[in-house]
View (cartoon, rainbow, N blue to C red):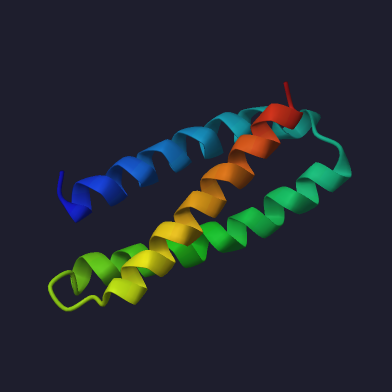
Length: 87
C-alpha cells in the first residue's frame, strides 16, 4: 500500500468518526463540546499538513510524514473518545 493510500485510509476513518460524532454532538455535555472544538482545530491542522505532504510527496521528509501520521492517530483517538462518550 502506498503512502498516499495509507493517509487516505486514515483520513477516511477520521472523517467517519468525525461525522458520527457530529450527528450526536447536540446531545453532548458542554465539556465534550469543548473537547470537540479542540479536535476541530487539530483536524484543520491535520488536513493542511496532509495537503502539504500530498503536494510535496516526493520531497516530504520522513519527519513531516511521521508528524502527520502521529497527528492523524491522535485525532482518530480523540474522535473515538468523543464517540464513545456519546453512546
